[in-house]
Length: 270
Image 1: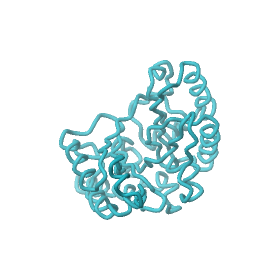
Image 2: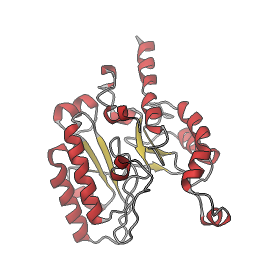
Image 3: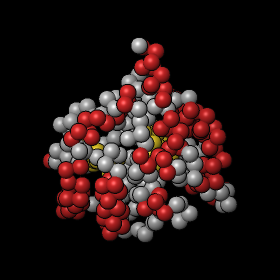
Image 4: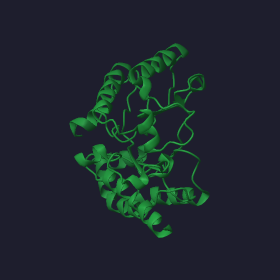
């Protein structure tokens, strides 16, 4: 991970401080916090320490997650500490896939989230989120919670759509994303997933392959497609762009660089 990416929001030109966050290009990690409540499934050991701890949460938290309780509490506490040291950075946390979690556990988890992040949680009443407005209000966390319980809490945002191709090749992934772009972007935040998916048959036929080798082998094609994308309010614009192995691969810096296209558009209009 390029250390300069840790403060990328505060490093954006002032001309972009009033652009809605839904119109910016925001990098995210598909691997982030993929823990389970009853299965011990740690993050990939080879990731850098900060990514094993937060795995992309410094920028945004876009991976639908099933949380392992104790590990989640510790990790989110580290996020809160990190936010204190980076007061102009904003994270987007998307919590979903809560299969098997009862009402009491939902209530306990939501209470712990509200207690941990406190006044940093941006309420839904903030209709248009920009960096300037968030900095002024002191908000640093947009928390999406995919459950009926979210409606009871002003601090919780609705589910964030995730364009997931469920393909194992770059061509399959980008083709799926292009078809979705042709239909028009959703309102609000949404995620375009550059993550690859290997089904059981492929895994059985290629025992020496891994998701990492598959991703790296397809990376150049994914990168070429990514560099052609544009953020903004147009129907074909992208917003949050997530992928796997964002530590060793330069996805974050490439996505952040897409925001320069917004500056060029502003310059042309003058």
